[in-house]
Length: 230
Ligand code: DC
Image (cartoon, rainbow, N blue to C red; front, side, top):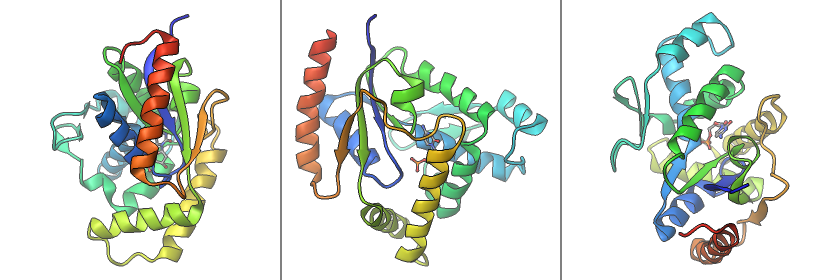
């Protein structure tokens, strides 16, 4: 069976996987797909519309009429019902809501279809929690990226501060990261888990150029094995 033309990158929040996925896509000239942004956007919009964050008829009607667009332009990553959510979804409170909405099976089914459709035509780097296990179990290349909790929390804090959120402390972010990990790992549907055939990478002590250099070669080798031209 031929492999899906997807580089699947999974890992916990703050592991550096988004930066790695983005840079790797750039280095290889591939489309970058951030699935966390989809859960975040859905959470933002459901909250704005007052939809309860549980399975049920209100969530179903919300999903039936939802118009999500990904990769609209170079400055607009994601839009729902015409509203550009690129910046709004990075706020601290949206992270919590995204973790809650990501546990609803109907939401995951909606995004599973959406993600598979997006990757139908083009070679891409897709990052999330369940890409190598559920969305593209037949991907030609799978990576599982992580880092220590302290490193991940510090990275998240730096990101929040650069987005103007000055009131958050490191202790608070460490607690949030641990809580989010626990719910991502233990949820019933599509939990965060390393695929058996994924390569594990701990980024705690590595620099970004080192990681990208190693991974670019690794991906080229996997593509060659799978008969895929990059
Ligand atoms: O990667 P992120 O922090 O932007 O993800 C936001 C939330 O969405 C996080 O709680 C995990 C969830 N998520 C998921 O369940 N499955 C994915 N493929 C991507 C993200």
